Amino acid sequence: MKSKVYFIPVKESESIPAVSAKTKHLLEESRVLSFIAKGANVAVKMHFGEEGNAGFVKPEHVRVICEGISAKGASAVLADANTLYRGQRTNTKDHLVIAAAHGFTKKNTGVEVIIPNDSQEENTIDIQINGKFIKTAKLVRLFIDADAIVAISHFKGHLMTGFGGALKNLGMGCATRKGKLMQHAEVAPVVYKKKCTGCGECAKVCPTQAISIIENKSVIDGAKCIGCASCIAACPFMAIDVPWESGAGSMQEKMVEYASAVLEGKKERVAFFNFALKITKECDCLAKDDPRVSPDIGILASNDPVSIDKASFDLVIAACGKDIFSELHPHRDGKRQLEYAHKLGLGNLDYDLIKL
Image (cartoon, rainbow, N blue to C red; front, top):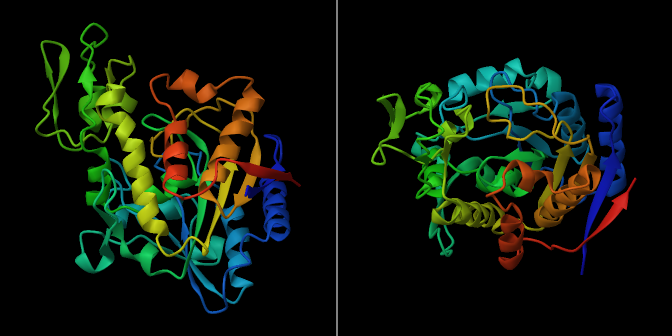
């Protein structure tokens, strides 16, 4: 049986109030929040954007969805986990500051913003899944303890997974820093000496000081490297990359196994919104404002994370007239995450697209 994916088109020229109105219409027509029970505690999984980035889903649109949850008599919180790479989202204090700077406050969204400190044991939980790669997933407890999860994702490209949407928002986004490290393990970047100019941009962003400049070339200390891929994103000359089949491919499957841990026992109590707007080459973790690489598509809603990501991918490809993600990240096959998630029973690759 195909899953239903609801879709409302949005053009780049449309104002924030107009897009919020469309978000409300999508919410009402799709009824993807119909499972939410009165009195339920709902974790709204967000990505608040890194400093200098503008690709994140706007708080005005998030408020509409939170109001839809409140209308069910449920309570919601906006939540995210801290990051592995160097930036303002590595710790709770600074993460809350950047979230507020981007407009994610109770005043603007109607709900509290919570970013648990995963260095405190009471904020973490281990979920045993016995997957091909992950035996025990290390997750932020808030998402597991919630009665329901609503994931609001910015659909865009990604330097390690080809593209990122609902599955990445759950799998990588709900993991503790230790869990993120498990997913990045064995992702060892290499320096292509002929391309390297020794500019040092990679060393500046490395969170573990694993990179040195020796004889005007970058050198990565494998013993210190945690595989966060910050250096790949920072290099202006594309002189650093990860051999796809020696870790980067399996990273997608680890991420999906983490998503399965988050969804365990909650498959009937989840909803997903993908905002395929301001689609960029890289994710919102980069501390810069990436330009669009595709026309704006619109907003999608579903109760199936695989179908909504597949539909988002298909719509972008159709709008661009080519596989823009493969062109931007030629060694990253983003469809691998979809196929593995389907194999694990997280959702369907076949869907009915219902255009509003």
